[in-house]
Image 1: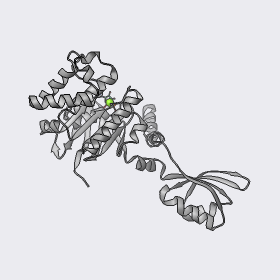
Image 2 (image 1 turned 30 degrees about the vertical axis):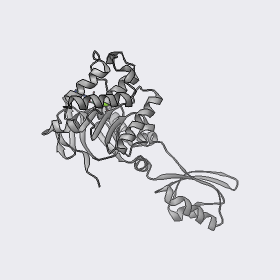
Image 3 (image 1 turned 135 degrees about the vertical axis):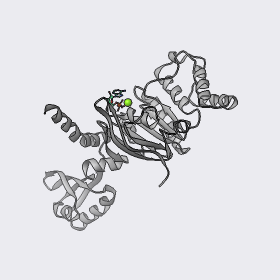
Image 4 (image 1 turned 90 degrees about the vertical axis):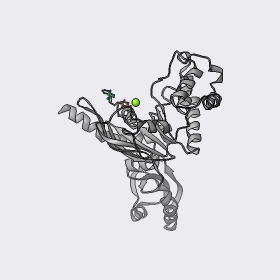
Amino acid sequence: MGELAIETVNLTKVFGSFKAVDGVNLRIEEGVIFGLLGPNGAGKTTTIRMILGLLKPTSGYVRVFGIDVEKRRREVLRLTGYMPQHFSLYEDLTVEENMRLYASLYGMGRAEARRRVEELLEEFMLTEYRDRLAGKLSGGTKQRLALAVALLHRPRLLIVDEPTAGVDPPLRRYFWEKFRELKEEGVTILVTTHYMDEAEHCDRLALMSRGRVVAEGSPLEIKRMAFGGDFLELEVEGDPAPVLEEVGAKVVDSEVTGDFVRVRLLVPDAADYLAPLTRELERRGIRVIRAYPVSVSLEDAFIKLTAPIEAEAVAGCRR
Ligand SMILES: Nc1ncnc2c1ncn2[C@@H]1O[C@H](COP(=O)(O)OP(=O)(O)O)[C@@H](O)[C@H]1O
Ligand SMILES: [Mg+2]
């Protein structure tokens, strides 16, 4: 197991009488792309602000690369790049001036800053806009500038809060290519998103709902958690029921047309079951016409995982 880039322990934030973040425990290993997901108001931004030391936790604590954020915040900020949810650069400074300003805030020397700014202008296709006021840029260009600024000091950890919200698909793809490149270079990335197709690109995910982490794992693990396994679909000629029962495959749906049976199964691991199950059916004289794993969407998994919590909240309101 690698070093932990981020560790939060019982992280909690209460605003007045409202618990925005409720006992969040995250362990994010160095070098991964970690997605924090959840509907609006789930507590993602509040969690991020505590990780960065911008907001003091009500209780619990955060360590970034083993460093206590509350005690040694400056060190943490030097290691971390942050792209906030809303554009927060100086709208009345030009692209280049914003970059220069942040380079000096990060404590970079003049020569190094000049080199790095040129490099990033080029990398993020900002060269032609260098003298444009940040406030006059289009949404997508603003986002590219915000990411470039977050990367000025070559952080080991990049935290991006909904970087692709309201961004067109080509630029979304571009951002994800960048994230993968950064990961290749060893940068750890914590990203929040609403887009489930983006969540599939993450190595690990935590799903937040009403201030709590309700599921954590790889995209595949989360789907298994939601449904209790993987789905397989079989089309066979003959009755597969005895074999299916023997191997512990649960039939969740079936359709019989004459001698043909189509069944949907729930198994602990689709990759482990597919070939042996097909062989066993054939051995027992049941012809297998088709057998394939059925992919479920993360969206379905999340709805399944959060439905009980939402239902409880609604019941709570009625009481
Ligand atoms: N400074 C604040 N004061 C009071 N309530 C806040 C404050 N910041 C956030 N909240 C509330 O905390 C909840 C979580 O917000 P947030 O962390 O922004 O969620 P998300 O980023 O997942 O959309 C929301 O209900 C929001 O209104
Ligand atoms: Mg947010």
